[in-house]
Image (cartoon, rainbow, N blue to C red; front, side, top):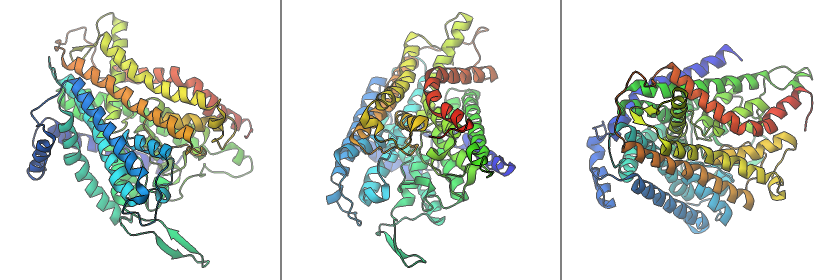
Length: 567
């Protein structure tokens, strides 16, 4: 580890902290019906969209209606994207003549992008037409991100309201998120990326002659527009197969910094939205502090593991850190930082190959996802995910002092705790359940490139990434098979909607409750003690649930390497 590496990490952290309040203030005004700098320009368009949809900003929904609207909207998204991919070969804007996607791959990809997972069992530049990239994948990048933000805001409203029967309007929240938040920022980001050298064209691939005289085909296309939302919306689906390790997606250190900041910006600011809407910004900062603590620990371990390097290589007399699978223009520090960020958020974009990380370095992305990516998390999804752990932490605190737990004046009762546990436990069910089946089936093991614990880690990483709606891959696993396309798709659906529906149920229950005045026995939830409790609950629940699986993969691999054993 170097001082320069830590300075780059601290610069990123400083930028995120500086963005929390201004972006949080803008989003609060947006979701509470206040005026924003864009209201004058976009207001007429917004109202016109409501008229087309048959709703209005004054119309609100019960949590069940909100949930049904969300489920139907996402079902329609899956069906339309599936149809687009299956018909791709006969549709326009396909200059390279890409064939239609097979049924299993089309199913996996449609579910992947609608659930904000963006797992890619294909190479983007060799499989998808420009129409599929723009009308299918990029559109779903916006809509899936907007869905996550809308649901987080609905849950925040629940804590901010008293004796209310409604949690907002799904169509209004989606419209405002897309129109006022995602689109304006993405337009600016896309222009910045183009200025930094990212392609944005509808022309076919470029042809070049190498110094040796050989002919080379260089894939280009509408990259910058997809890149902007893939980062801001924590989608992660790359135009190119190697994602942000490709120089056309991530030309250098400046573009890398912009991309990492974009991944965390909205998720971090949602903590401030929460604090503002419940009338106490310290509540938001407490949640942000818990997220930040877990993030910094993860970065430190990942950076240390990669900087320490491979002891088997050191035994050959070669010193230095582990540069395998990393781009020289980013180095160890920025590769470790990017890996931690992209798995702490449900982004999944990569600027290095996680399969080539050291065992403990690769374990950090796994842990980030196993915890439900609540360390900032995906836009919206990370925030309502950590609120599930807040409910559990408050319940534990109530048990310790022998009184009914309260959070922000709302009593946390059996229904809320049951729904929170359902949301938290559905993830290990999908991650560990499918991984356990895959490692004993010939069709599952046949796709693994590595033997021993690393091969197990590849399978575990795939299902963890799918259920956590992350989309990054360990590599070394041939996922484009009927088994993996179907089972990973099911894991994505479980990880998305078996968390969302219980979260909305909690929102409906909390919104209907009266606020209880604070008393001398009320547990303060805006201080260091609560941050420690919340962090501890997250670590303990994650440790008890996932340590056995981690012990079979990265932990035993690390011990084997230190003992001089290879596989």
